[in-house]
Amino acid sequence: MRDQLTSRRRRASFGAACAITTGAILVGLPTPASAEFEIQETQVEKGEIEFEYRGAVHWGLKAEEAAEEDEQGGALEEQEEGEFLKQSHDFEFQWSFTDRWMLSTALSADEPLDQDFDLSTVEVEIQYEVIEREGNGLGLAFIGAYGFATRSGEADETEFAPFFELASGKFLFTGNPIFTAQVGDNRTTDSLGFEYGWRGAYSLSGRWGIGVEMFGEIEDLSNAGSFNDQTHSIGPTLFYHPGGVLEAVEDEEEDKAGGRHVEFFLNVGVQFGITDATSETALKFQGTLEF
Image (cartoon, rainbow, N blue to C red; front, side, top):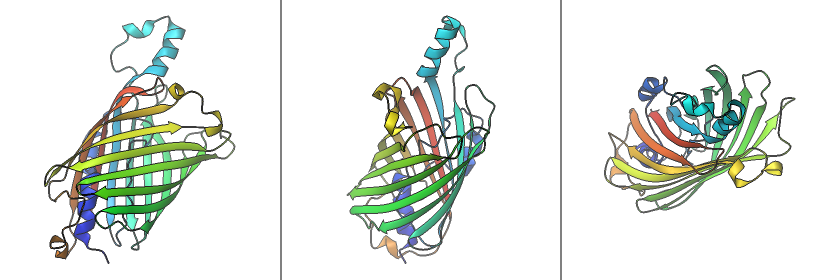
């Protein structure tokens, strides 16, 4: 079995974010209506349990504002700042029941611009680690997921993805290309959809790391439209791990430590929209409590 400390350090450096307690404080803040700001790693560690919160705050939904300006004759300029904030919150539980397999379930709640805040999706996901990354080199895993839509008139969705990591020294690149498909009578797409997220992260010191993340989505690959009609954003991220060392390559001496204890990881970032279909700015939060 791989050392517990190794897994915790890898996760602290590059993926995990704001703890559940921090997430609870942020529940009242506006955030986006999907989990597009999640970067998922490839590592699986038998017996490991995680509770994670994800959320973000969006300002300036340009496509929505333009549409309402057409209908209201420019009345948007007179409305209060924050009128077009969009919010969501994801709460996820993960359990690694072998050294290769991990099961997770997530609850997503959001508040679209024209609807009330409520539960939007319940998702179940399975992950299999194909290539274990130990220090520098490649890590590879595959995931399959099914999301149950909880709102009337919305379609269920399946997901399939290869997740990969490339590490060199204190630098780690993580990629999440995801193929999606709507299921059921309420589907509105003709073919597969595509979502992606990638992160380049660098360890600055024992507790801090910085990175750049980019996210995007094409709802229907057969009717993708122009680039400006798709959602794409990019921005910096800051990582903080109060109790551990941020390293992309393991230290074999420290890997001898045993036992399991609670770990707390924090990450906060800003995303800047680069198309009209994307909000102008988003402040993102992520968090993990790991046992």
